[in-house]
Image (cartoon, rainbow, N blue to C red; front, side, top):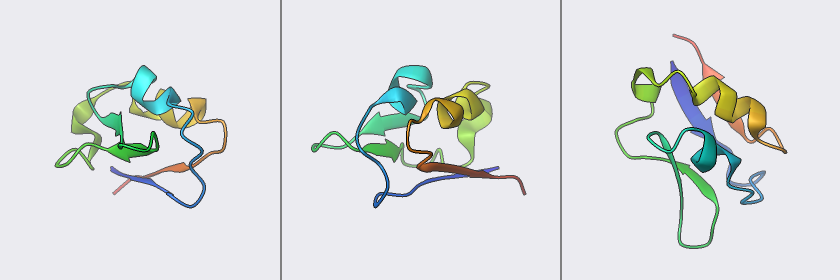
Length: 64
C-alpha cells in the first residue's frame, strides 16, 4: 500500500489526522500530510477510513 495526499486538493479539514493520527498529521499551515516513513500505512487499519473521511478526496491509496 502507498498513501499520498494531493496538496493542491487538500483543504486542511483534518479528518485524516483525527481518524488515523498514527499515520496522518497536519503541517504548520493545517494541511494534511503523511508522517515520514509511514507512506505504506504501517498496517494501520484506519488508513482507508481516513481516506473515505476526507471531504475533498485528497488522499490516494494505491495497493502494491
